[in-house]
Image (cartoon, rainbow over all chains, first blue to last red; front, top):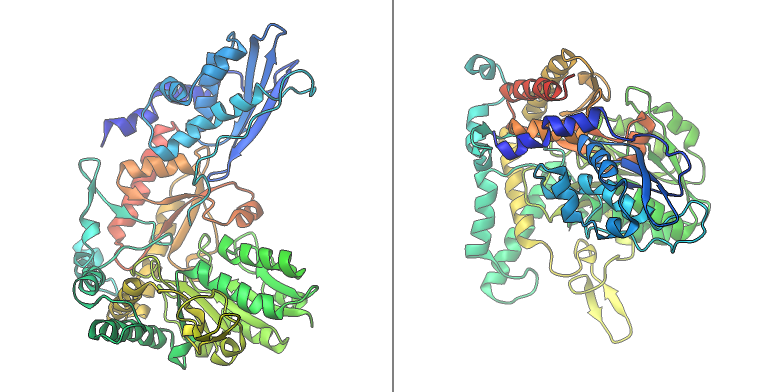
Length: 148
Length: 416
C-alpha cells in the first residue's frame, strides 16, 4: 500500500474531522457564503466576523461532506482567524493544499479546496449587503461536473 | 477459491485471462478488483484486437470511397450492425442506428421525435430512478415545446410503483421513457408489462437499456419497445459508440436530427433530401472502429451466453448482500437480490461515500462514489451520495470477499 494514500486519513486529519474547530454558527457574523461540490454533494458554509479594520475576528464553518472537505474547512478556520482580509485574499489554493498536508489526487483536491473557495467568496459577501464589493465569479474547474 | 469457482455458471478463470487489464496490481501489491462496471466495462483481447486489426488493416471512411479499402471498411461496419441486430433480435438491420452512446441515442429521440411530434400540454412519463441522461433531454424538450413531465414514483426499497403508471397515463401521454435496470439500485423494472400498458393508452415507449443489454438477453420484439438505447462501452466494447434501436415505421417518418454528410440523398444550395435508414440518422463520419469493436464485443458475449452472465452476476449479488449485511452500519440501497441486476449500492454510517471509495482503493477495489448521475433518485432516498459496486462476467466470489474485507478496514480507519 502506498504511504501517500495512507497519509490522507492520518490522525491530524481525522482529529479535525471528528472534533472540528469552530463548526457551527458565528455570533455576530458580518460575512457569509455557502457553496457545494455537485460532484459529491458536499456543502460548506463559512461565516466570518470581520472588524472595521479588516481583521477576521472569528471564522466558523458548517456543512456536510467527506472527511477531506470537512477536515480542511476546520483547518482553514483555525488558520485564518486573526488574519486580515488581505491575508485571506493572498492565501492561495496551493497554500491551502499545503495546510492540509496529505498529498491529494486532483479529484480529492476539489474536496480540499471547497472551503477555501467558499472563504474566498465569503470575504466579498457582507451579510448586510453594505460596504464591501460583491463576490467575483466563482472559480470553476473546466469539468467540475459529473461523470456517468 | 477453486472450490468456489467450480460451481459458477461460467469458466471464470478462462474469461479473466481474456481481459489483460484485470492483471493490474495497484499500490505495490494490491491486485485490481474492478467493481465499477456500471460506469464502464473492461475489454477482452478479442475486442482490443478488433480495434488493432481495423486500424492496421481495414480502416477507411465508410459509405464513401469507390476504393477497395473503403468497401472493406464499410462491409465490416455493416457486419457490426448486423451483429447488433441479431443480439437484440431487431427485425430489420436499418432499425439499428449507430450513435456515440446511450446519451446521444436518447437525445436523438428527444430532438427528432420530440420536436416534430410533441406539442404544449402533451405528457411524457419518466421515473424517479432515471439516469440524468433520461431526464435532462426531456426537460430540454419540455423547455422547447411546453410538454409536461410526470414521474413514476418508487417504493422505499427501490421498486417502481408500476400501478402508478396507469394513473399517470392519459390521452395526452405521448411517451413513456424508462430504464430497464436502475444504474444505482440495480432494480430490474417490468418493462414488457409497462410497454403493454403504455401501448394500450396509445403512448410510445423508450427503454434506456444501458444497464440491461450488457447483462441479460434482450429481445426488442418480445419487449415490443418502440425505442431502445444502449452503449458499447458498458458491454466490453469501445467507448464512443452506442445504439438507438427504433421501429422502422417510426424512424422512417421522423426528420433527421444532425445534418451533414451521409444523412442525405441529395443536397441543393437551399434544401436537402434525407437519406433512408439507417444513414438518415448517422450524419458525419461514424465511430467506425468502435462500431466494429462493438460487433466483436457482441461476438464475445454471445459465445459466453447472456443467460450465463446473468446467472453469474446474480450469484455475486447474493453473496455481496450477504457479506455487506454482516458489517454493521452498512445500508444497502434497492430491493432484494432476486429483483436486481449486478449492482449493489450502499451507504456506511458516518463515512462519506468518497472516503469509502478512497479507502477501498487502497485495497485495489475500484468502486464508484457519488450520485451516479441520479441526483433526483438520491434526493428521494434522502441521501446525497452512495457507494456503488457493480459486477460483470469477469468478477469472482473472491473479489466480493475482498470488497467486504476492505470495507471492514475502511471502518477501522474511521474508528467506527
